Each structure stands twice: as C-alpha cells, then as structure tokens.
Length: 227
Image (cartoon, rainbow, N blue to C red):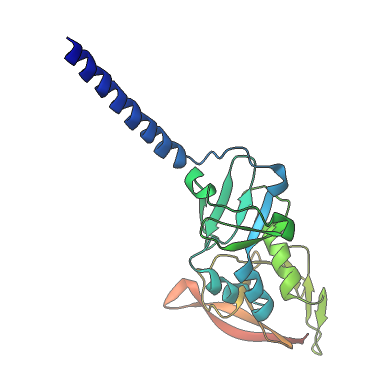
C-alpha cells in the first residue's frame, strides 16, 4: 500500500513539473507582454537604417542595410509591433521581449533581442502609422521645403508627402518595387522616382515594364533640381 502511495506521489510530482514547464513555454510564446513602462512607449527605427539614410538620401538604399532586421518597432503597454520590408507585420513574443534592453533609453535608443540598436523617433503608439515614419524620412533626405529649377518645375516637401508640379505624391516604403536605386512616390494617377546625389535631385516618370507591369518600372527623366 505504501509503495502504491509513493508511486502515485511521484507521478503527481512529475506531472506538476511538466505542467509548470509547459506553462512557462506557453507564456514565453505569448504576445501579450507584461506592462511596459510608459516612458518607453513610441516608435523606433534601426540606427543602421538612419545612418544609411543620411548617407544615401534614399530610403530604398538604406533598407538594404537592414535586410535581416525589423524595419521598426512600435512599443505600447502590452505589445511591441514590428514589420519586415514594410509589408509583413508581426509581434514580439514574451521570450523575445525578455531579451530587449532598455537601459540606454535616456541616450535615445534601445537594444532588441538581437542586440540591434533602435533609435526613438516619436511618441506615436499606433501600429503601422507610416505617416509618422514618412515624415521622419522626408525630414532627413530633403534639406529644404521647396525646390525650383530653371525650367520652372517645382518640388515641395510637405509633412509626410511631397508635391511635384502641384500634384501630391506619397513615398512607398515597401521594397518590392524596382528599380531599387531610387525611391518611388505615387499619386492617385502617376508614379515618379527620385534619385539623389550630394548636390542633385533627379525626378523620373516611372512607366510599367512590359515583362513585369506590376513591380518593375522603366524610368524617363523629367526634372533635375540643385540642392
């Protein structure tokens, strides 16, 4: 009888241990995070991306620097949202969150679970609020709010979009379009590409490619502006 009681006790103990381990694994794969301090809430971009943006003045070229990283993080009370290629959205798990490092937040950055440095750019906590990110990008890649060339063409930089010859265009953040050495902007009816050097801004009309009418574009030079 005592042997049976001992065996039942040991079986119950083993089951409890396995149950606790299973609960722990389940918790770590959960995407509802423990309460995150409000001081960390906001939108973050990779430092590598920002450095590349300041060097190239081109979003698409800067994106090549972070192929294996999240494009951005949006941190809120119980969730960290991320995206890949500004296309696939996903959330950070509890297990991943435990490897985040907020110790350098006072210096303007955090480290993610892969020890990549992300810079705080906004208090925005709305998921996939690309207007905030576009506004930040445009503030870096354009030095002035208005450019006019000798032909009378005009380029204006608005809050989170641009206006070229009185038509408004929005920057395309995802990286599925070609060519990838310039940024694509779209209006309701047209697509243009902008290529930047240290002292010139070139604007191209982007036309469908017969072999790939959806994503690959041919370019036709429209305007050149001096910075």
